[in-house]
Length: 205
Image 1 (cartoon, rainbow, N blue to C red):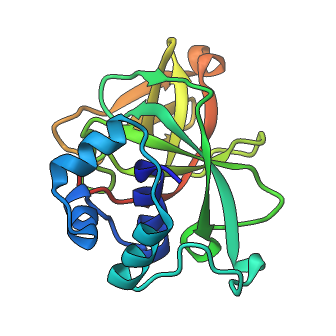
Image 2 (spheres, one colour):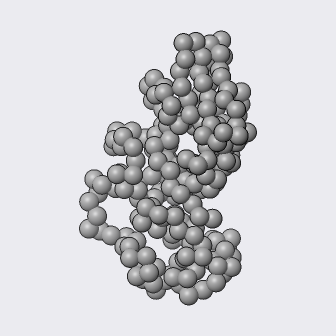
């Protein structure tokens, strides 16, 4: 397992953000060393895993976990959905992370989920830059008012709250510095929903 994957996994297991500094302290090395190992795609050794488990009081791979309480989510490590002016970067690079189903709002084993990264501050304080977002992929259901969605409009991707009006879609940011926008009835068909945000894992880095 690579260092960056391990940080993500511990964050999920502990339901708390884990920084590179915290990981470095648990291993008795410097933060810069952790950063360099991430850049070099360094693997974690068995002895290091034991130190990490003792420090964070977690079991990295626990065969006793109830499989029905864990969902294995595809985490697209290089996908960044914008919480600002609108952009998204797609990549085929992904890894699977075990996520407690209790963290996922409205979880169902019949739904498709993935995890991406948030970029920008328009949804602050609900979602901050660097947070990991779990997306429930859209299946054609009606938009639920005031829920946060990942969507494409005018060839740009956004993470925003959506609400329905009589003949328009209202796009809202949680950060008051960003203005509310609307999609008129004539352009609603240009809105492409990717999915609804059902969990956010906070990041310290």
